[in-house]
Length: 335
Image (tube, rainbow, N blue to C red; front, side, top):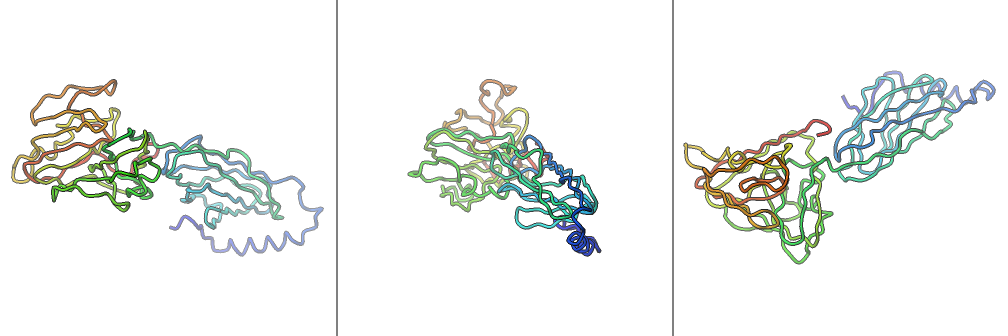
């Protein structure tokens, strides 16, 4: 069912009749009390996540209408209420109802950009008098809890999860980053064993990594894809540049656990043999298969051999294999 318009067989006819009646009713018969509407918003929501807006309206008379204007970058998802007829014109959503009062919720998708945003709206009574909707107006949109920190100079950047379609290309993902304009951004093609330049249309995916030179310290929020996705990357004999597709209480994973899917590859052959964490604004270390790795609780600095989210690592494969990630979308709301 298309949630953007709730179709009722006779609803438009009844509303038209009520409008006509409203125009001829003597003013003395009409109540002088103003219509009231109250909006309820959560204090905050994650960037790109869905959340619910509550509306209560009363004092409208025979029928009424609530008109909501969503902030720029927000999109209307729908309502499960059968008490309202919904029409949409861009970011303006109209909820028309029969009777003096109504109480309903509707769902919107937040902007993919963090910041503070404001809703606005009005309620109309049966005489089409307009009154400003009260209650909550402002909402803070957060990054969603995962930020990648970048330092001045060269960095290896990656995403631990499939990105929202609004920021899943390099041009979109890096739009607000203070990148050194004198340097080229690179990725390494394991299939050909050569460096290639990253274009604006390059898709930023989990398990991949990119070399980028920053002009100053910066952060980039990670906003997950609301659609289904499964993370993986094909690795080839030779060097491969990879990242950790994982989210958990500890922001990393032991390398031997992270690469378990390519420890042995098709035909019972050995997969990876060597892993290098380069000193590109991340802790340098070298791991050879079978080596010991100390535990870490997420506090202080991690021991050698821990792959961290947002970074990149060089993996040397003896034979081709498929690296499997650990993050799947969609995530539950609020994650």
